[in-house]
Image (cartoon, rainbow over all chains, first blue to last red; front, side, top):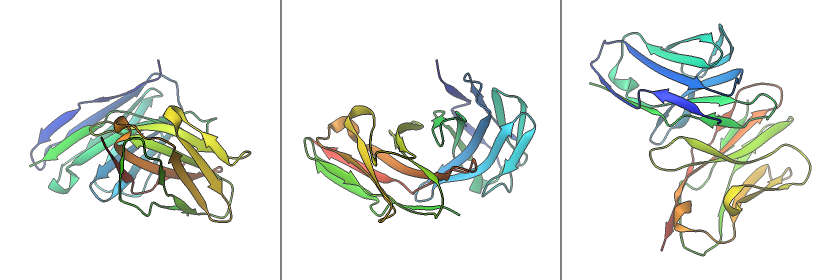
Length: 113
Length: 113
């Protein structure tokens, strides 16, 4: 069953707190992504991971870091959350022989107050 | 760098109507083009893609898209829409040589009964 699972789905944090968003996939895909989605801004790429411990910054990496210690698991970390990081975060994985066919999770809605 | 432009932010049609959602891209090399659908509160789901061959590609649920190199376009069409087609549609482009995938800002399709 091809699935990308994100946890938690909803999260409220205070400014300055740490945030951990987790993503898992059961397809052994090498490449995984973290995007954020804000109204009027579409999808913005935060980080790409090409495999375990092989990560690359996307377009808006500031304020975020990632961890990929197992192929099936890719985490997004906010070490000191800011109110402008309130957003919906999407994880995706890619079947590498498929061009740009991405499998997305259901999203994690983060509110920073 | 690839760019993707979806000229219509909102499209409203009636059930049974045909619809075309427009996508234009800019890139000179070999690319993958895709369309994704996002229902409210969910992640994106792959609809269809084009890389080479027949410029008209078929997707799920009666959707098709046509690639035009001369117009740098990849418009999505459906002959007869259903209320359940109401969603946001994203066009995406990526170069065949790398893992970066660029999304348009999305088109909100509303299908009225």
